Structures are given as structure tokens and as C-alpha cells.
Amino acid sequence: MTRFCNPANMGDHAERLTTLWRDKQLQYTWLRAAQDRHADFWQVTGDALDFALETLGFDRPSLRGKLMELYLTLETFPEVPDVLQQLRAAGLRTAILSNGSPRMLEAAVKGAGLAGLFDAVLSVEAVGVYKPHPKVYQLAVDRLGVSVRAISFQSSNAWDAHAASAFGMQVVWCNRYNQRAERLPGTPDREITSLAQLPALVGAA
Image (cartoon, rainbow, N blue to C red; front, side):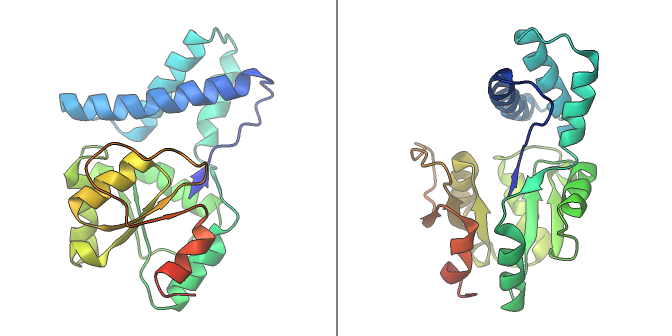
């Protein structure tokens, strides 16, 4: 739903930094989950950024703070507000289920102008472990008070889509960048390239 945009005037190095940062960020969530040593996503994001900055030889004291603040102002893809409005107009409940900490999620929703468009904003902090642990997907079932098959789960991360499917949810994988299918348990029910295609799939168009 969101995307990271980098205005820090880093030139050709921006893509290398953001790619390494994101890869290490995910690795740290998985490794912490495997070790049962949870820390919230803000800390994990900062730790991953420190690794990326040091690895690529960036020595700009002000850069870390600027990049971390970007995570409080993530941009949505342009179709997202309209899609959410269509879903809600059709009587469907909407929710976020995210690795983000409550503070990060609150800032992202508010900053993107999406306040009031969700029935629930759920953070993994409620269960103390990151996706793809089954406890995270169970959190949505418990908080929404519905059966697992009543949930249509959307993600642009293939590993997340597979994990939700393996848990038992109906899953739509938003494959924006024509990625290859993962070799993991679970199989997404549908594949789309933009969330603009979602209302028609769930009968909200």
C-alpha cells in the first residue's frame, strides 16, 4: 500500500542504499523472530539503516535522521484512497496488518490522508513477533472477529502473501513489478498488478 521515496539528494547511491536497507530490515525481522528476541520495527529499521550506511561508506551525520523520518511519511500508491473508499462503500471492512510499530502506522495513515478509512490498524507489537509467524495472521482473525476464510488479504510481498495463504486466508498478491512466484507453502488465490483491480475481485466495483 505504501512506498518509500528518497529525497535525500543521494544521487546514484540512493537505489543501492534503499535496496540494502530494505533487505537487511526484513532479514532482521526474520532473524529476531527465529531467536525469539523481538524489538519493535522502529528499532529494527534503524539497525538495518546503520548497517547499510556503514556498508556503503556513508559518513553524513544528518543523513540517518532524515531517512528515518521518511518512514513516518510514507507515500501511498495513487490508487489506494479510491480503492479503500470503494471497498467501504460496498460495506466491506478494511484493516491494516503490519510489521510497523503503532507509532509508525499512526503516522503513515495520518500522513497519507487515510484516517477514517480503516476499521482496524493492527501492529505485530500486539503479539511480539514478526510476519510470517502464524500469530500475526491469527491477530487479524481475533481482532476482526471473523473466520479465517472470511478475510481477503492483500500484500505486495510474495512471502507475506504465501504465508497468509498457508494460514488459511483468501489472498490477493499485488505483484506490481512482475516478480517470480515464491517456492513457499501456500498459494495466493489471485494475482493483480495494481490495487485498482481489487474492487472487481471482491465484488465492490
